[in-house]
Image (tube, rainbow, N blue to C red; front, top):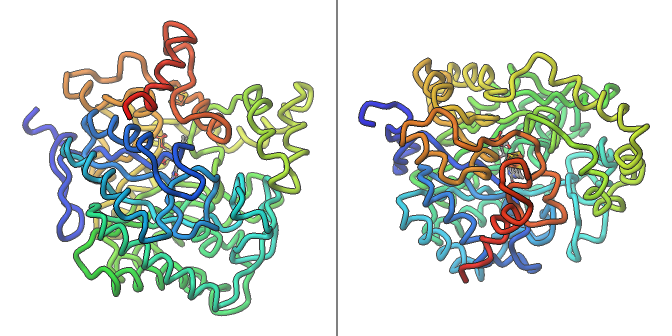
Length: 437
Ligand SMILES: Cc1cc2nc3c(=O)[nH]c(=O)nc-3n(C[C@H](O)[C@H](O)[C@H](O)COP(=O)(O)O)c2cc1C
Ligand code: SF4
């Protein structure tokens, strides 16, 4: 394998060196306790990927405040009490020579299942305009509340450093709180956090400065950005930020001390292009009911999924944006454009699964590494399979997105039965994460 760029080390920031060019991308799942404390199940889950050979794991969505969760049952980093738990997770991953980067997050208005801490809606956002797809209600934050959030992110980074983790990532992509400020399709403020791109980026840039002031220049800090918002999933919504906007934001992040940019897409999550692939509405008809009361459009959406005669309406809305775009490397051109504009490493996410496709992207300088979620959920040992000379895994991820659609109700894992000998084998694999206590 020597000389293979895919397995060559990568330096991130001043101190972080990862052994190859593959990072496990962020994957949320309901493995944790209701108070936000992480469980042995999460440690088992993360360790699977570390054992499988990835250079680093970027955590699930980890809220810096308990009110910032997307779904109760996701681990948080909102209190010093949890530092030893994160330390335990970090040590388990380090045993397999993998690094661990914690994704610092806040949902803003994009909160799927509020949980007991968030039953008082509307939630905080840049705007008081309800989220467009599900109709999640929200309230524009005051500048005092923004200052409180900035400090919460800085404290989250400090806790990650004290837990001995290898760095943090700001989740400034996919429609969560930072996107709600960044996006011209969402942010309708009239104060100095709204209007011009520089104003819309102010919250993110203040957080970067606060983190640097708290943890110093050496602790790795990367930013996940949606390169293009494509906010008009519902055609009457504004398109939001374009690539030129995000290139400027990426440069500002770099100037303030960000060590890498992780390139994603879309101003909501999920989005037709994120994760790219299918969206089986028959499955949504049996999982989306968990979210019916979360937003004012929840019941309408449920009917669109539940009744086969209505499904073509949603299918048209969802699938029209995908036309002509590949699943594997769906955002490679955007990553390449951002890479040209910044001098820090760029990590690209979206559909990667074929060794030669990634090698070509690395060799052509389109990105410095890839972040993979679903293909690693399907094959935790994907990197080892590539190292053994395979181009694609034996039973590849089909991009069916059944893992994603099960997330609100069921344990995280691969739900594509065609990849298994039978239903029992699939369930046994899903349950394996609970077995080693
Ligand atoms: C089930 C699931 C959960 C995800 N959770 C997160 C998350 O917590 N934070 C995040 O930034 N991205 C999340 N993503 C997006 C992935 O990290 C990744 O960027 C996206 O799925 C595209 O990569 P892939 O094609 O390799 O899956 C999630 C994706 C899936 C399928
Ligand atoms: S359910 Fe399995 S095959 Fe389908 S997208 Fe998720 S990981 Fe891939």
